[in-house]
Picture (cartoon, rainbow, N blue to C red):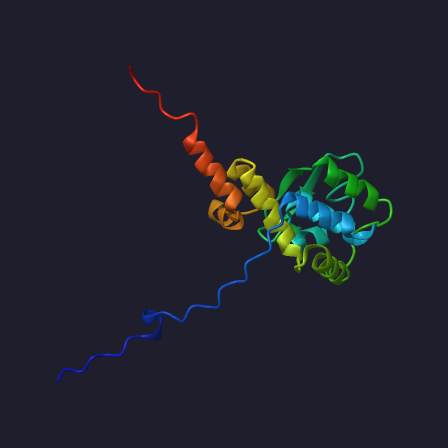
Length: 197
């Protein structure tokens, strides 16, 4: 009988990795309840800013004054050294995000936000108490990106805000939900076609 050669391991593929955990996506009302339940201070400021901007947690913790933001500025400067994708850009800030920076800047010179571990512990504890589930730092990013897409923001604009190199990455962050499905069906129903007489 002819000898059949063994296939190299790469040709047969590898077993699939465990699926990533689904992020917790907060609706706008849930995010506001969580923010207001946090005690005033570093964690509330961080959570509010993270939710308003949708930036990566690591990027937020690397922001410094005056390099990235200075009092009176309406935009945030993202430099390649603080961004995972090394995507330098100027981001517009919401009024709520600017209010956080105005409050934080006089108290902390240099780094704008406190240590990650301090924020994370307080966020986990409060979210479990208020929402009945644990919310992590990255969940704030997923929530904001989802909200922007569901609100009808252009995907390229959301991509720019999020700092993604590819639209497909932004689309992965935008978690489809019941409200988005109902809105899509509502757009189809519309007033309906007119009949000819």
